Image (tube, rainbow, N blue to C red; front, side, top):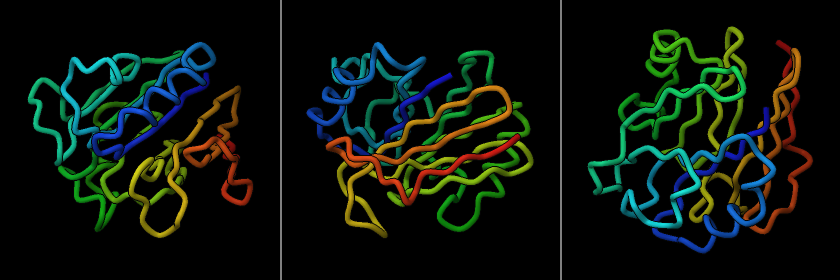
Length: 169
C-alpha cells in the first residue's frame, strides 16, 4: 500500500493539483487532513479523501473519515477536535475505537511520525505554512509486509532524507 498525505494547504490549489498530477496514478489513495479552505466540490480536492479542518467552512466535509485502503484501516482527521497540540492521547483512543492501523492528521503544521502500539500516527506538516521547519511538506507512506516507510518531501518534491523513517510492526 502506498499513500500520499498532505494537510493545511489553506486555499492553495496549485500545490494540490501538482501533487495530483505527480502521484494520482502511483498511489492507492491521496489524503488531505483538512484546512484546505476549499469547497467540498472544488476540482482540486476531487482526487483526495478529505476531512474538515478548523479553517474549513464547508460543512459537507466530514470531521473524521475511517477508510479501508489496501486492507488497512485508516483514520483521517484534522486533529483540532482531539487536542493534538497538547497530546495524542484522545486521538489514540479514537484510533482504538475505529480499529485504525494508520492515523493521519494535521492542524499543528508540524510534521512528525510515530508508531504507537502498532498504529502509525502521522502529521505531514503543512504544504503551505510550516511550523518548526522552513520546508513546506507532505508525506508518502508505504506499507509492505511488516514494515512501514514514511518519507517526508518538500512541496517541490525533494526528499528530506534525514526525516525518512522505517517502522517494523
